[in-house]
Length: 346
Length: 219
Image (tube, rainbow over all chains, first blue to last red; front, top):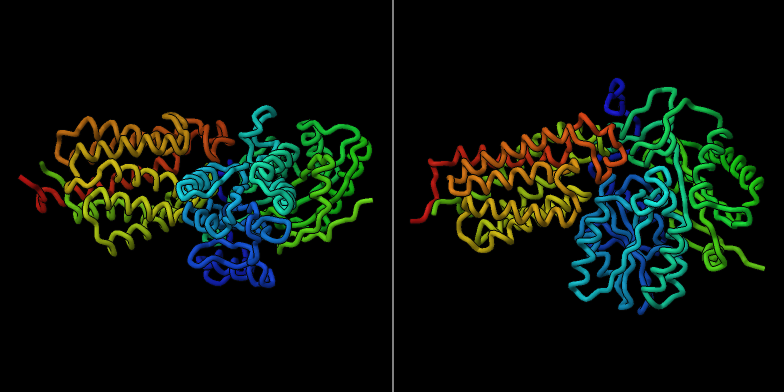
């Protein structure tokens, strides 16, 4: 059972006072952006330093502890701002409202975040407050985790690594489109075409308490487990990288379903402790499976994007691209947590 | 009508907050079982914010004290807990309005209004294994004792909340992060129901201790 703890362990972490971790993380993040983002006074939110008048702005956000998600994805052709919660906790309405006010350029603000109860409630409260101030807000929830609810109940699913490609597409669209409705349309399209699944090998721990977020037996893994240790679909013995990759891809591919001739963006995301070497093995097998099925990979991202501290495991994400989404994928993007030089199209 | 004035109401709420803050480890353990383990830290942070706000401010009515409590929770906790506890106290405080004394009837009104606001915000029904499973019986018990003195009314509400919270161990979570646990959530208490029942227990104890030695009554 998840509730049974192994003997107390104190994972080593590089911290000062654990209570200050979030505030200090934000300082470090802003400094890393080379003046392109700034923290708002008195609240845990960051916004881009330069936002043109009349721009539809994109506000993302969620709990800390999953860096670089979300706040690491604020930048050029990415989100315009992020509301930052404490570790694993949704940001409060006053943080979201302050960020909304700071981002509003008169063309509306799109709230784009992952589908968790706490985030929904806090963003909804903030949206009502912003609406009362005359700021137009629309919300698009990201729910890409196929393990978290059956097909047909997509809006019950959690948002995981699919957050990144959706934010990238929406950031690019918001740089182009002049109305909130059009940006929201692209957000929904990107969201509706992305599917992910993760596997957990071992838990991460909460900086303040040192406690693991869940426990797994030494030799077992859990397919489909969420980034906070939410239960997945199957607990089993650890198998090979190839077997795991094929097993997870099968569920992802069957869900949309992805079909021969589809073009996709592929994301292999480490949940924290899993290494680039391991992720590259996953990529190798994923490409083999996709090639066999005649699914063409338009672009690949591999790295630490949506993490849960030192949680071991990875997730696979596929986004089906049409010509519009491909265009956004190909645009350069510049944020601390995700950079792309873009690609020219022939 | 007898009731608690502003300073007595502050004392009630602070005693509840203090008991919740003291229960940080218990709440953390409960949340680790079926959540992500941050409930104890979050509510303790919120209770500290409530203490700062209530000891540092001037309030014209018990309703304002409730609203300030809601604002402090909403602004400091984050996650579902902050939104829910914030909504509960804000809505309850608005219902109390400017009445100079917190009475049993007023308290029942506040709990009912809070319940309605929490359900509308979080979409939880009785039986979904959430804080509502402690709040709904507490509101009903308070209404049942609305003609009794406030300590008795609070005691009944706290007892009903406790019973309701304990019953969540027999429920399967259908909302929030625990919902994906399905039957694995059986046998575990809902952390939000637990923290609410602790808060009400603290308020009830404070009311018993304050009554009738420091009655604040108006003819």
